[in-house]
Image 1 (cartoon, rainbow, N blue to C red):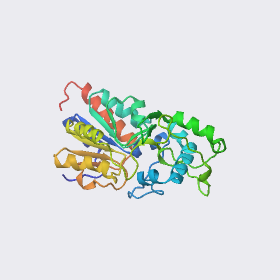
Image 2: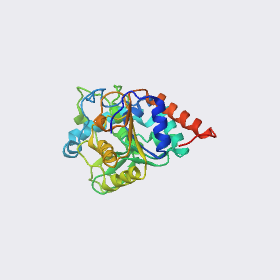
Image 3: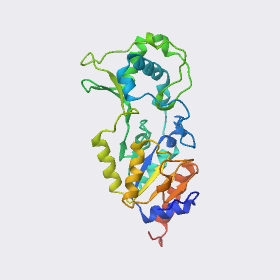
Image 4: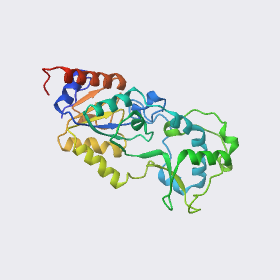
Length: 289
């Protein structure tokens, strides 16, 4: 496939008309208009320090204290975020039959809040917390209420918000932050039910996402640099199967050589134009696919 950077919006409309069952793969860029920061710049480099790894979280009690202290301050932004225009446009495209499903690398559940029905949360859900010993699942807001009771001095702190409900708290003694035990088994480590860096996507979830891609006629990447392999693998799989790939993302991505079309344009504007163009084509009596 030869990539066509800077392609026209009509080219994307035409591609979807020829391949009307899209699998959409989204990343942090689709949620930035909802006030949630992203991780990488237009070169695909980290904007800030990489997030905590799974291994560091599981091995270090102080690391977990740091994580939950920052989360108690920062997660309110993620919890209170509303879907943006891009989320609603993707839901509308699904409702009109153009989208087979959405694979999202985000953990904010904004696609579901916007009305998308067929969504694979590739990296899990930030609104749930799992005990790593007994697998108990609890709502995150319930745990945060308990954390606030245990750590009242931390509740009113103000800090710059980082991606995925983190907050920048520096030069703070996290060793004073109290962590609760699992309410069921009493000793398991409580961890957000998300895939941290260094961890693996569960096999059943990966299989569901791959099946969604295999049932589709084209792949549309939206707001992701695909620098993490868990997302890049879908572009690689689509290319290997000869499935056309379009991308809407500003700057470099790991899959630039694989795209049929690439748009370094506003996600909101590009998706809105796509919806309008496809709706016009459906309404036109002489339209052909």
